[in-house]
Amino acid sequence: MKTRDKIISAALKLFSEYGFNAASVRQIAAESGIRESSIYNHFRSKDEILIQLIKNYSRMNSEKEIINEDLLDKLSDPVDFFVRLSEELLKSWSSPEEIKFTKLIISEQFGNIGGLNISVSILFDETRKIVKLILTEMKKNKLIEGDVDFLAEEYLSPLFFIRLEKMTSLPIDKSIYETARKHARFFWQNIKRR
Image 1 (cartoon, helix red, strand yellow):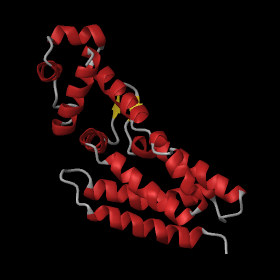
Image 2 (tube, rainbow, N blue to C red; image 1 turned 135 degrees about the vertical axis):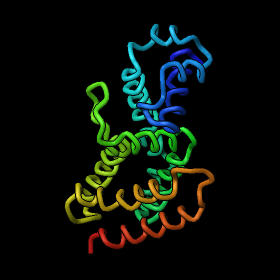
Image 3 (cartoon, rainbow, N blue to C red; image 1 turned 180 degrees about the vertical axis):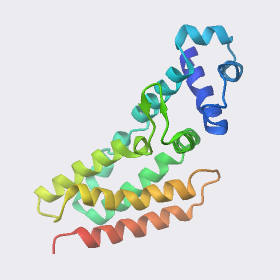
């Protein structure tokens, strides 16, 4: 693992456990196994570490990886598609790193660090874009009716609530997957063109 990645990983652990303000550069250095002065060869400040961490996780954990050929093949059966998409989203959100990232964003919400406004929207902006794109295509193909922006929010909001309520600690309660499947079926029944 590169030194820069070690710093980011240590910062994620410490920021999620203690909060941004309580975690020091000295603690990050100790956790990453490098000298404190070496951190400043990679980052100008603790703020810059956080900004890079958010950029990395927003990009790395983008749900673009979830939209693969297997899932796209399910589009011919929209119920199955939304069920699988819900399950895949929950799986991607359940990694230990993603749980730490979620805790970090929630604990720092409403803050402005290094010019970056911290908001829970960081956790699902990319997902929202992807869902809107899928729903737009469904609407073009006359499978659904309604406002795509609103429908994307209606689809994601319960899943996001599950993420916040059930997925901020390990072990993850597996019943969340059944809840997500029920939500996906309910969602499709209410948006399909009649």
